[in-house]
Image 1 (cartoon, helix red, strand yellow):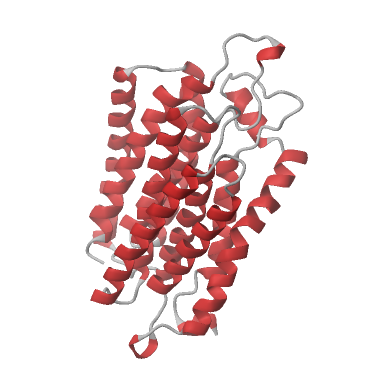
Image 2: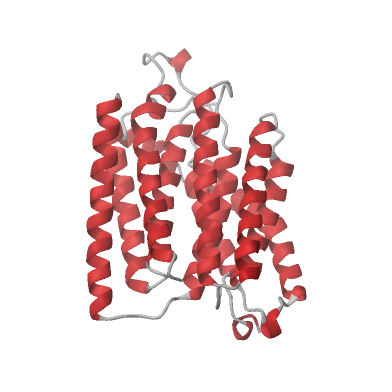
Length: 325
């Protein structure tokens, strides 16, 4: 568990840089020129916003990893994520662009992250706690589902090279967070678990590349396979191995849940948002951006991924044999 703090903070800082790049470089690419109705954007037009929001979620997951799942760190990570999204909307309304703005946002974000981490570290030394394996496993599940969303994100034209670059970078960061949190949740860091973690990370990164290589609109099958491999691997890494080996029947059930659960939960959250809860349109209006064409829907896929990840955590974040019984 010694690796958890430096790795978690390093990955959170990388997510901050990714967020700053998304605000100043990617977001301007998605905003249409002119208010004319024939230029109103279509489905998934604000893909840069979803990539930024997932980067913010990655910051929070990295803090949970750095805090080894302790409640104080987890609460602070959730609060920071919510405040960061609000700040993102306000910054998006200003439309910052250029290298100087990117550097200022990245440095400012890392300063906030560092100040919060230092405060939590100081408070932890005054009142040490025990690592929360359930919280770490749940964070790994959230990062795993968000990986699928980032890897499969699309745009109305699907011709932007920056979309592929941003999606690959965000998904790769989330893969490392998922594997790192799962390894931190393990009861002991054995050589077998470390080797499994390395193999899982490589397999998931290759899977992300394969998802992006498939033509848009036909990514469901590779995304489902990626989710099954990554989330099943999370359980094998994080759960107990009584007698030195996994309980394979438990992991077989986890594999079934990992195969069917993410897609089912994503649909279950996306449909109500499209029909009943115009959350995406609200964020678009708050940021001062053009509304989505009335024939299309303004869906916040990053929020769907977060809710689906939390639902998968309820299914899979049971690292001890007693919990699962």
